[in-house]
Amino acid sequence: MYRTHTCGELNIADVGSKVNLAGWVQKSRDLGGMTFVDLRDRYGITQLAFNEEWSKEELQKARKLGREFVIQVEGEVIERASKNPKMPTGEIELKVISLTVLNESVTPPFTIEDESDGGEELRMKYRYLDIRRNPVREKLLLRNRVNLEVRNYLSERGFADVETPFLIKSTPEGARDFVVPSRMNQGEFYALPQSPQTFKQLLMVGGMDRYFQIVKCFRDEDLRADRQPEFTQIDCEMAFVEQEDILNTFEGMVLHLLKKVKGVELESIPRMTYDQAMATYGSDKPDIRFGMEFNELNSLAQNKGFVVFDKAELVVGIVAKGCATHSRKQLDALTHFVKTPQVGANGLVYVKYNADGSIKSSVDKFYDADALQEWGDAAGAEPGDLMLVLAGDADKTRKAMNDLRLHMAEGLGLRNPEEYAPLWVLDFPLLEWDEETERYHAMHHPFTSPKPEDLHLIDSDPGAIRANAYDIVLNGNEIGGGSIRIHDEDLQKRMFDLLGFSEEEAQKQFGFLMDAFTYGAPPHGGIAFGFDRLVALLGGDEVIRDYIAFPKNNSGRDVMIDAPATVSQDQLDDLSMRLNLKE
Ligand code: ASP
Image (cartoon, rainbow, N blue to C red; front, side, top):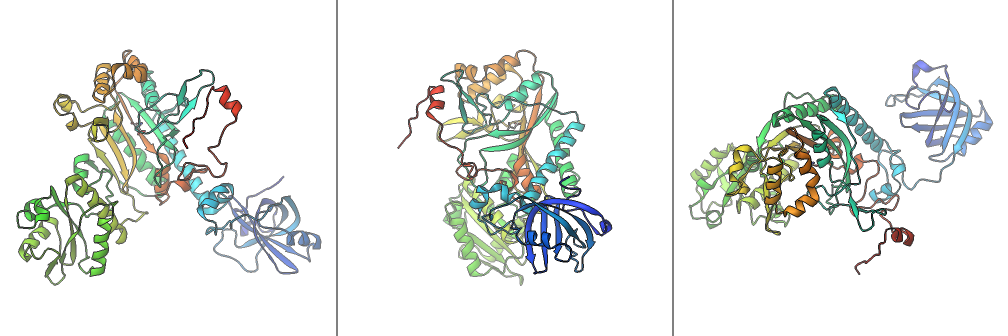
């Protein structure tokens, strides 16, 4: 028997027991007549003791052990002379009677410690060694726990896990498809699913009623820092439901996870419309762990002779509590921040509401203390607070102010990763105007149902139609989104038409779905959660890469297996394909 126990479970109560352990050599200390070895497995570390008085032979073997050797030992649990209260096994050690080397190891390219000396790229290349490190292993185990809790919650409510295919054709989630050539159908290609969207809707037509799947999705996007080309969704769909049913069901799931995984008990999840979110936070995924809401100052600040404000579509301010003491240097740094190309503002106006009641601003030339006090009153500024004001085109200014708000909060330590503030954002617009292609795009996807009360705008002002679409946001990150679907063939056709699909195109791409709708499709709707991000947030992080066992880097490469890679001429010949690489 390789082992009778794991390396994490023996304690003072086991003293006197004869046990076998197996694992990796974390480190060893050679003291001449004695050697101590830390033996590690997934569950912990146990100290092994070798002593020439017990066995010269085993001691000699132990002195030759290198880092990461795989060994098996037989021995007796004894009480340690110098105990380590920080380790669960710290009161005991194993008096080794017999040592077997199961496998040697070359010296690993980085230290297998909580704080490794290995850089990111190196750790990714040897990811299997990285996974031996506690922090990485803990993240994967957290992922497993969240996965199980999701399954428990949904199974108890009658959701059935149904697998859907990976070799399909395009699903319109707004990204580029990964395509797979078909050998059996030469010249034709599968697309990997950007999501199981159409299949889960077909499962509703099929009467499955409540579906879920924790499933891989594939989107060929240029990778921003925190995206992966293949990622995991908790994908769900329900029949005979309205928006309210979905919100309640999945609010329950998020609260369940927070409670079970983090011990955080919340009563409910607040709701806000998309319009409110944009006006109050300049973002459709606001971080509501802190205030600093937007205050529109147009009526107070315009027509007082300050041209910058006068010609602006929007003048908006936020109040940073207790920041009136900001130095010139700090304010300059903020001005510099808002003027960076990513933020894109032209300048920053500040008003200090000093603790002594005096007011000092960068626009004193145009506004007297009374006028500035009016702004402060409107925005809820108190003595000691600092107001920051941006002005310009409404959309751009909101975006810039959102960046500034998050930047300020970061600096003030208001974004505590151990605090959880989920939020529903409702009533998203159905369509989004794309300047480049000069047409409407579905803001969510083309199967999303318009709000019936807005349908009359379909010809006159389609951009103003709101959808039965919702997002769930956690600490300023979108963790999920979904919608009530169109289940009527005619409406679906009109939608495709609005999105600029010709009838033939719509038929070619989605004829199967519209056909299905002619056979009695029930009203249905659903949601999908970004599982990687959700787990990362529950781990107190925003970076998803560490929560994926074998992630890709920013150029979409797996540097461990070195993929993607070229294929042989035979493989290309089988597919009747020839490469035509651009220089
Ligand atoms: N398929 C959608 C997505 O991946 C989610 C949904 O509408 O259920 O974003």
